[in-house]
Image (cartoon, rainbow, N blue to C red; front, side, top):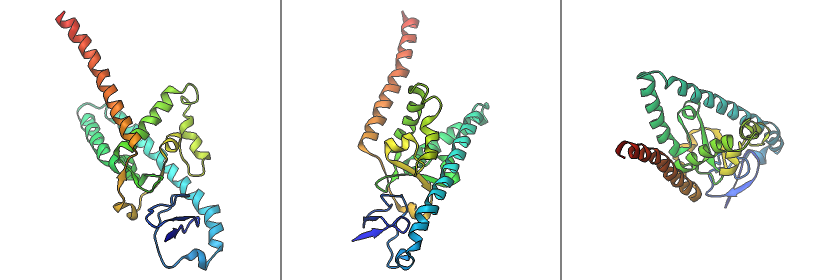
Length: 214
């Protein structure tokens, strides 16, 4: 048995939570309005999908601005530090299900191509790739190409979205019971970066200790 997406009419496996073509939340139902109104197919493909993704990307921009604003607030002594710690802990918790605090407030969420929510390792790796692209690719990365090219992508995917096979959709009650998962490669990437960061912090410490006790 398969499910027909009510937005783009693509056929999906019965167990799929999201459409493999457009990312629409699948809801198995005996009544299919597409069969009752074939003209809805063309209208949904032509108008609804682009407008919906355009709305989501505007929310993503607002979330990015919110996160930047929080970074400035954390520079305020004591209250800013408390805010920063609370925001960081909340981020770690929400990353397990494809969100950060700004995304939670604005009601958007990261989902994987397989229909699962983006789990902690997947969300972490996606974020690190965005930073790596921005810092390590001369000129192209420095002018934010990985982000602004999303405006010209049908599903408004950034470069790190495409690399991680993720896309951002509006949050909905249907997503509440969907699990957050991560690709094996994302888990490996996480532990590699943790090891590298740990060594990066320990080496200066060892150097300082060497000078102090030499």
